[in-house]
Amino acid sequence: MLPGRIPAPASAAAGFAVVDVETTGRSPWRHRVVEVAVVLLDEQLRTEAEFATLLDPLGPVGPTHVHRIAQADVTGAPRFREVAPHLLELLAGRVLVGHHVTCDRAFLDREFARIGVPWPDVPLLCTMHLARAHLPQADGFGLAACVRAAGLGWYPAHTALGDARATADLLRHCIRARSCPPAAWAEPLREAARVPWPRLARARSRAAGEPAPVLRREVPYGPRPLGVQPPAATLKDTGAMGFPA
Image (tube, rainbow, N blue to C red; front, side):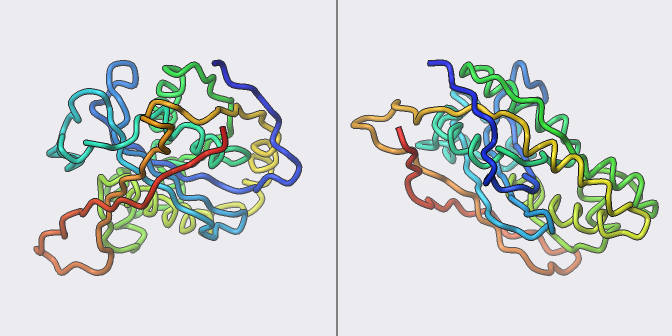
């Protein structure tokens, strides 16, 4: 079933959707998303909600040495089609934010295309580009280098939620910099609110119509002494994810 397409309602939440994906490889055409996270921010950059889950890529999970996701970790995880309705609800009406956001967008675009959902032309905001303009002291422009230059502390890199939270913090840091014009984001926010978004019925791939689970990787935050290995991620089943039919 092809999805319907509706304009964002007048009451739709406005703001930013900070996204991050972990993937089975570098090519959106040949590889799949194995973890996705979204951090929703309002127009004042306050966190409104978070969502993250591992995904079953229907094949090998790819570079475990990078994202630290083992094949066993995705056993029982939802497929992308099962979380797609919720992702559409989260992203609708918002500016899409990411660190090298065109990469995250490309993977999401291909995942939605595989299930027949056309990705809308949404405004993008890239924290890598912001950092180049407003973090001249950075010794590189990968997320870790930018977070370090901004003095934002340690975060669990290469976990989708850890990267999305760090990207949200970096966005706040750059937008609030004196060198950043405060009115620059007003029009993208208005434009995002006008974009028509697809809607999608809940997937029915599970026995007896069971809703999809949510498997979230949790990693403790906080200061980490130099030379101390970061804590390992733990898997947390945050409950079933239900959508209206």
